[in-house]
Image (cartoon, rainbow, N blue to C red; front, side):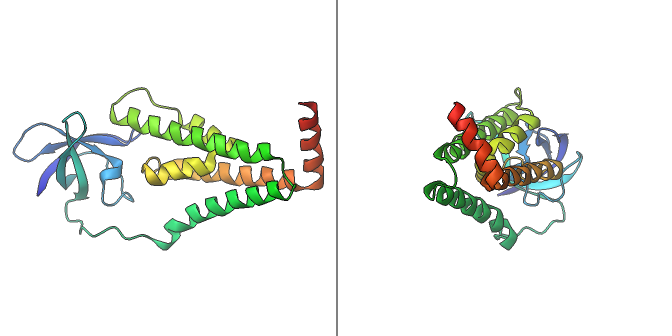
Length: 204
């Protein structure tokens, strides 16, 4: 069953707000990930239709939220939406192959895997904090994890948790960290980079 209401409160920096149902009643929590179209972010006072559910604490929560007049459709995977995960998997396979062939030390692969796990956990905690209106992880911290090698884990969190995947400014900075990280890896694979890396490992 679908309901109607108006988004009367919206915190764009946190990606959530509240819907006031038509006819009155308890305000309904709405998260950015529940919007059927995240290309247009709410600003507040928009008319919407939504389905109603409850969270694990029994609080009302909206899902499948659509702006008034917006045609609802089944979400279809977009071709370009699969390119990023494929790129991440191919990247990790490339690093693994470089380690097996001796072009990179195993510590590099370990760094990517460890920081990816840390990044994924950081995203999960930040999303949980956003939904509970608690202290958030700074975006600069999330970007730092990506820059240090955790960008595959960050990408997995964005896709699986639907967190930070619709904010254009965040995505622009995120992909800049990916490019910088890939450039750093390319330098490590060069003769001069490999020599410096080996010197550092020998010193350790």
